[in-house]
Image 1 (cartoon, helix red, strand yellow):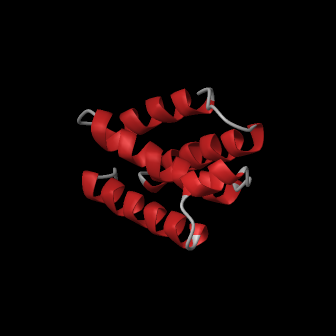
Image 2: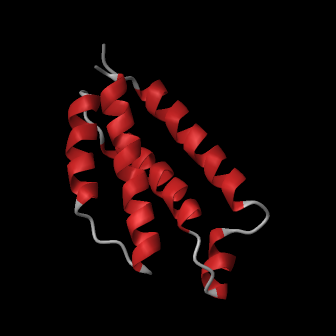
Length: 104
């Protein structure tokens, strides 16, 4: 079956929409500066970031590229409070895993 760049673009747009919805009227920088933890926002930010990275770095086989990138995201160090870092990383891993599964 496979996945296309259009599939990745659509998934990224949906992740960005969900991120915006969950953040409400406050942006991530304002939340971080206030010291407010918000793992749900970081989760969607991670999804959006991973899909954007896939679009920038993918070769012709998007499934192979997504698998390689997912493996990198699983162990990727992320700065910040552990709960938010874990949510960000998990968002990226989930986004890539979902694309790989959709290709099956």
